[in-house]
Image (cartoon, rainbow, N blue to C red; front, side):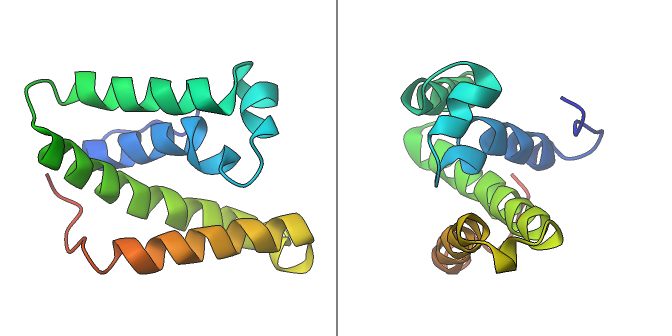
Amino acid sequence: MDTLSRGHPVFELAGMFNAYVGYSETDHAISRSFLGISHETAVEFWNKSLRLYLEGADEDQVRAVEEKAQVVGYARIMRRSIRRNGLNTKAGQKEIQNCREHLRDLLSRVDTLIF
């Protein structure tokens, strides 16, 4: 929770996405060591939390907000990994490549972070 801040909720949702999904996407054991739950449970928690936060939104709206949060989340993960010498380790390279692929896909659809 140390990365929580004031401002547009997309940044808070990006932090939540990273904690529950993003950071453990390439190594599911991270969910267990960081959160004490399986990766599958963490993904389920993220999905349910997002839908509760966006109560009343239809699935297209939920997906659109999730994609905005993912853009910020993957950019943060990539930056963190690069700053921690990730370009020079196999795990870091895998994480950076995962973010790059997601961002390439997401940026073809997401043109604003506002919702």
